[in-house]
Image 1 (cartoon, rainbow, N blue to C red):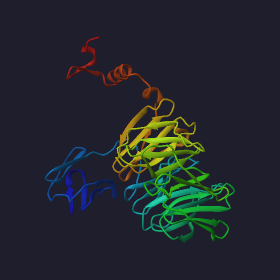
Image 2 (cartoon, one colour):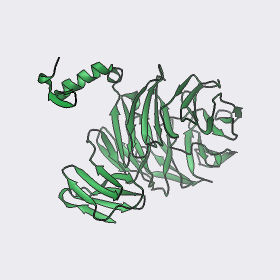
Image 3 (cartoon, rainbow, N blue to C red):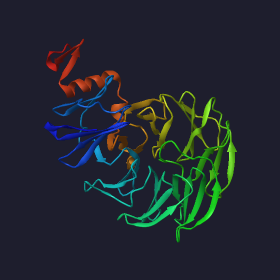
Image 4 (cartoon, helix red, strand yellow):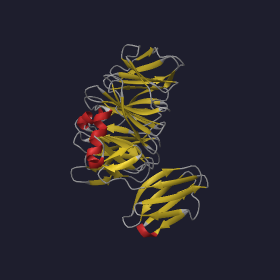
Length: 388
């Protein structure tokens, strides 16, 4: 069903599993929201910057536009891939199959390549920064010129594409699917090798993953580590009680992450098999994980609809951000910001380490000074009337 809120030009398109909030004056989707059941007819009320939707007799949703300074771009479906590029551009893929290149310096965004028929799941930039490889759950990959975005080649593979990586010399492209690891020559894009593997990185896009290894589960208690350097396989047994071996990833620089049945993340420095730390807080499988360049921060998105940042120096969880789906987050170059999915939006948040590490008393004092008010019991009072 389609319903309107006329005083602010918004339309709601309700479907069985969600709704889209559409702004007619700008001809764009503002937000996608996932719900269970269709939107109740006649249940939309708007006022100011809020829109209230009666999703069912038991559920009411209240929507408010995000601050423009935190919103980087929007796409035509749920954001499924965020990849910051070395030149400062940002590549964003959607669950609807579109790929958007965002030039943050110019404040422009445009679609590139041909729209896929499935989730856009993985991307890699060639070492000479002239080619983009894009992979989708529709069993295809596209090779594009960069930065103009013209498609050079569309390649059909045997299953959904979950991971892509150019070799350091740019002469090969490794493409993992749900069934195989394909090795392609980049001079003619022919497949020169094919290796049988099990499902690799099926929950969430391949963000921040190792440039040297693939890891996948073939047994209950062990993992297979596949070396891209010599195409060799090695089986390992991580010393993680109640491990979910299928929920494992190797991130640069060669840190193996194994999730256990309590959804805690166990971090192992390969080739060791014993964790050096265990990070808890997630309440569902994790989707993406990336280490900062100095190896001191771990950024994780999860199926509990959150993005979390941990300090690896002390294991402290610095913050938790709510998302709509929770499938993807990424560090910006230099780690001054993080990018994360919020429905059909990419948002950014500055990492203020001084603020994060501040003690609670100091943080409260700064918040009061900035707001010009304080809490006196349960009453909000002007700062000058607060007790010292």
